Length: 466
Image (tube, one colour):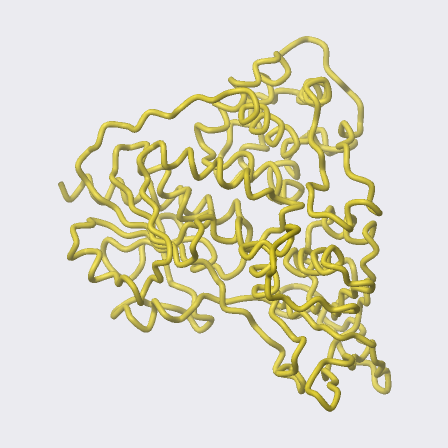
């Protein structure tokens, strides 16, 4: 480490689009560090001998080492150090909840802001993308074949790690484009599609084959894959089945799941001028939920022309599960937060279209099983929001197709695949699983960590069998 430390208590600020400009376009909100900014922020890292930040990272990125290279101006070296453990650094630098993982462990955070680890990760990845055009060499094949179901964060990470070990890996993806939630769920203004495509292209250079439009459990089954010569299978099919509240009016025209709304915008390119995407454009919309998906849906609705957008959430701001940064950005963009409110009925007109959402006010009682205080309805507190669109963003669960077509695959009461936490081993020998298909909807980096652990376990399993 250089001797001169930057002892500023605050992170180097990240340049951003003006809120009143960006809420009308789908270009990236955060504009990224310049080289000077990145070096300045890197100089805040103390280079701890026992870096707690690494322990806070689900894929164990060698954080002080990549940051040191940025400080020294070795941006290529920083990227290569990241890639040793992280298959998707440009993605993680944008969408990982660093504030609750690596940065939460940073000692600089005790008397100020932690080091901007995520911002520096994004910088290194973006610099490499813009300045280097190095083709990866496909490792020599070890003669073994592995199938991966799902081209989301868990599947892509597992595929990449196995390909680097010489395995012949084929990924089967239900959609027409690989990327999973990275491509259909996260909006362009948070994660540009070109970034995801670049990361996937790098996996293809390693020899990973990707077959799209292939639904696991329908177009291809676990048994068929084994019959075709695959020696192990990783299931990373995510959690794409949306939940609804089962309240009156949910079948009205103008009610959508956040999954459908975001998928139409992302995969059907509604965010681009010139695309005639079949999508409803409400003038006033209520988004029910308080997670990152709810923030994404609300901010997309604003950009798609909605004049008024509400976030309706039954707990207080303290309990909002969304990242603080996403909540902050949403508020800046004019999203109205109706907190401690819960929908009880969606109102329709005589043509079956949404004309409002009836809500009640809530107050917080004793903690529930999640540890958060349970919301309790206030008697006589009903009110109505005049909206012509409602988007439900209250969670998802795994699609049951694979379970129904795979004999012996154990799932829990939520429909999630039961798998060993350390290895991803399921109830079927040679079949592993990880990511949202196991945990339910969670973060990109946790899914990547599961894919990484499963790849190591699959490698051990195949080598022990050989």
